[in-house]
Image (tube, rainbow, N blue to C red; front, side, top):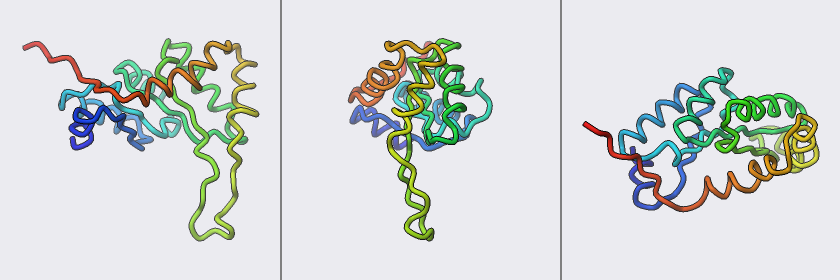
Length: 161
């Protein structure tokens, strides 16, 4: 509720590291109860949810569905996730990220470093191989992030009684 109220005051986007789809849908409902549109929310780590219908429901509410942690070992899975959103007509609600270079506390030298270029060297070529157009790639990498992070209040329409 605090994030919703802060959004209404500032227009800042809300990023919730939910992972779980049911939690994300509950967050969207809570925002709407506070008068904030689902479009103000980024569901971070949505790739952790195995039920794609929850991705679609979140996008249907206007929320951003973010598939993170794109790495060499899971490019195919991320392409499938994004393709599923495209097929359902929700590509305009998708964000993607590496979430790379992660430092692991307690691991020698911080653990296994993952590069910051997988999205460009492997993921984008894989999208193209799966029929994504340059316009759709631009939507994912330019238009969607610009829209998601534009400062503006995204208020929910008043409910009719």
